[in-house]
Image (cartoon, rainbow, N blue to C red; front, side):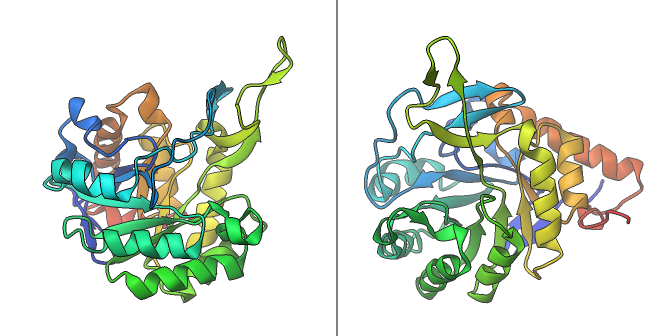
Length: 303
């Protein structure tokens, strides 16, 4: 038996395969397909301080080797999560990390303070790709000063594991990663979706109500892999990798590039059981290569 355990700051994951935010709901949806304790953890659906209805339909579109989405962080707000959802999932025998979103720094702080009181959720994934209303619609995560500011202020009110989710729509993602590391991030997760669009040639209309949306799936994997490698070589904190992971080989490549943990996203829409297959595939790979621990795999790419 190989040791699949991975530690991210104070969080110990029983294996390095987790489900990405926005693709697994609030974990309870996946319990219809498999026992939640079998995966390393769940990065729960993005939550906001108040209710959000999300964008108008259509807000998803299939593309070659991927998909576009513009869901718009639809959720009923953190108070609803605390009163109705948290009681159902808090005893799952796996790590639960909540994805935190805001339009202003004040939103992030208020939401984080509420999450900090939940004893069974010991980590947050700080999504800094959302619009900063006070600065005219810019995203916090596309500049070092913006990323530093929101990470620094959230760190002041959060005493558990702080993972910052990075946008790939930047000039240098390594610089952004260094910026949040310097402000107290315990880990970074990357990549979020790439900005893209699709047009229906017959109707001559965009396929998304918002015109543009986030591209995910196999099409982005080579770029995501490159960014994970760059960030892993720039920071000292753990890196969580995602972007087009469809099978065990994909997951292994991300770990070889330096990811301590991976998140499976778009593949879940095709096969809800894919995470279990990936866990088995990673374990088989380690056994075939005479590795005793998954730690031997992290950053082991030979150059």
